[in-house]
Structure formats: structure tokens, C-alpha cells
Figure: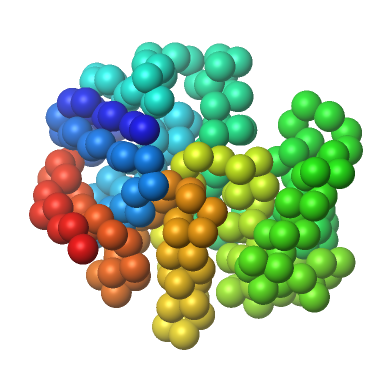
Length: 228
Ligand SMILES: Nc1ncnc2c1ncn2[C@@H]1O[C@H](COP(=O)(O)OP(=O)(O)O)[C@@H](O)[C@H]1O
Ligand SMILES: [Mg+2]
């Protein structure tokens, strides 16, 4: 599905340049569930942002389903479409829209090019709420949800356009251990039952255990590939 080849990403750090990703390569196969672990500041978010095409690598190739996308401008139409249709995102802080309900937040990504969701999209939203165990919360404003419930809404929203790839950046970072475990199980279910490829960044070794492949980001490179 994805091939990152010799990716380098640097940021200005005062007068110096900080090399965050250093000649990094990664292959993601269809159906994979990959966890990227690493210390805070290791570059996990940077790597996910490149995978999500929100950030361009300075060097290297990014091929998504046969198409070279690494060199495209972040505002290019092909890239916007890829980002909206093929890739779903879950962030640690959810980034739900506080003035809207659960239902409205989940349907939001379907409204990029039109004012109302189709019947099919509304059916999908209902199925996803069932899948996530949040059907009873449909009309509740998202500001009146627990952290675990907000994470479930964020995952449903990320899946509404049936993306091939789901990117999750520290999705359980703000949850207690029990909630984190049930969200971990949910990701496993999404991977197995909805056939969604997942790349998840986490600093938690415990959380990484739900993934079938684990990679560790150290000094800008991916190490310790473990297949289970
Ligand atoms: N836009 C940016 N400008 C400058 N430095 C950045 C930027 N984004 C990230 N960094 C730096 O890159 C390093 C990796 O950050 P990040 O990818 O957020 O790591 P992680 O998600 O693993 O905690 C950090 O040192 C961070 O300060
Ligand atoms: Mg991060």
C-alpha cells in the first residue's frame, strides 16, 4: 500500500537544523496494523504527518498505492482528495467540533464538497456508532462526553469515508488504563472486521502490543521490527 523510501525530515532549531527523520524507510502492506513507538520527541507525529500528507519530506520518496505523492504540494487537488477519501485520522486531543453533536461530528468529513450527507453515508454513520458502542449518544453534544467516548466518536469520524488507511497519533494518551485497553481492542476490531490498515503512534509499550507489527523510532530511524 505504502512505501516510504529514504525519507529525511529536518526542522530549524535556532541556528541549527534538527534531523528528525534520517533516511527512514517503511513499507505498509494492505491490512497491516503497525505500532510506531518511541520516546517523546522521537519523531512519531512527524512520521504520521508525512504518511497523512500534511507534511512533505525534505528528501525521499512516498508512494501511495503506486502513486508518488511525496513531492506534491500539500494543497494540490489529488492530495486533498487522497487525504479526504483514502486516509482517516485520529488525534490524541480528538479535535472534535465542540458546537456539534456526536452524529454531526461523525458525518463532518462527508461534507467537504456538498452540504448534506447521502443516505448511504447516514447509514454508515449509524453502523459505525453501533460498532463503537456509542449509538445511545447520537444527539449528545460532544462536550458532554467522557474521554473514552470522545475517542470512539473520533474513530467513527475517521472511518466515515471508508478510508483504506487509518492513522492514529497517541489515541489513548489521555485515557486511564481500562479505557485505553478497550480502545486498543476497538482498533484491533477495526483492523480485522473493517479491513482497515492502521498505523498508530504510541509512547506506550502496552498499547503497542495490540498491533501485529511493532517498530521503534530511534535517532530518526525505525528499529526492532517485531512480527507477532
Ligand atoms: N514544525 C516544527 N518545527 C520545528 N521543530 C519541530 C516541528 N515539529 C516537530 N519538531 C521537532 O521535531 C522533533 C520530533 O517531534 P515529534 O514528531 O512531535 O515527536 P513525537 O511525536 O515522537 O513526540 C521534536 O524535537 C520537535 O520539537
Ligand atoms: Mg507526537
